[in-house]
Length: 416
Image (cartoon, rainbow, N blue to C red; front, top):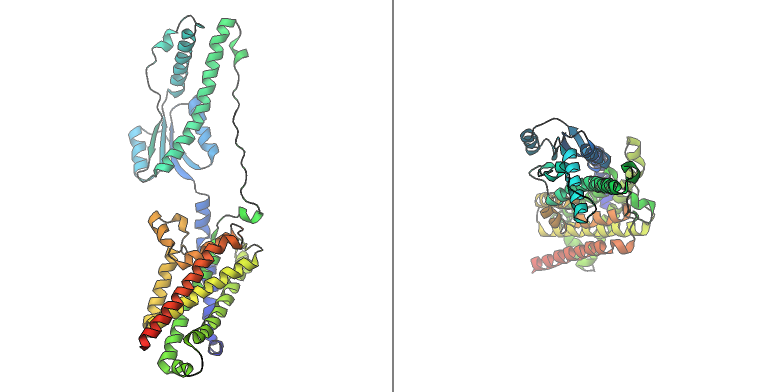
């Protein structure tokens, strides 16, 4: 601790650099996070039908608020080329006679069913010869996932199914009214939704309604990164003590290797916790002054402290392992820096894990930075409790034990 406190420049770097990094990364990623949350799918709509069916689909797409609709008059080949070229994610072409063909098919269907039931004398000649297919042409970009295709097709089906049912009801009413000598307008009935959907919010506190924004992601992410980057300083300290003979003199005193390392762990853990507090304060008080959202950490300070201590122990344990394995400061600093950057990339520090490819998401599970970040997200966004973060805390503590044991065994083997 005395050595650390005397190095005021080193302490300033340990504290100020991560704080500056959090501020810069939150500012840089603020717009991309908003864009992702407000993402709208580019859709090319070629509506050649100006009647009921065309208007129903067009209005349904607009009210869904998930599509960025561009309406153009394009041929099928031209629309296909635009979607294939990546200008649009989806292309939809509605035929010019879509509504007329739908009405004719429904009229033919109703007349046949009523004739079979003996409720209508004959099938109108105009509907008996309807043979054309009513198909909406849909193009998807080549890299579109099957699940997304199914979702879009289900949405389009929802837009058209109610119109189909309404049209069937109107034609049934019209045909039946002929037999009852009643006016068709008196028997037509608008279909209301018979099955409704009641959305129940699964969150129990207002905090749980938070969305992952640049501040809620970057502050805990770069806090963890800064805590783990202490590996370079810690490993360098171990190698320096070994090179100048300090470690040998310490070992002549009563006590074991574990005792010596415990002292070093305590000092650097204290530094990690100060880093954590300072960077959380940046998210709460400084970032809002720059026009960014305020960091919300919730009220479970005990759980936050547990995660911070566990993360600090994992970082210090890794620092001891790196300092023990390598013999020169250059080796330890290079390996420590590169390995932390790799673990940070895998752990979702640079970009959230959910936007990564599936193969990378699987690799994220091996990164201690991912465990720490997931625990912070559980607390800051999910309103989690100690029980919710316990699996991640146990992984961090096991990582600490594993790295410390590895350093101890390597040190013991090297002495022999």
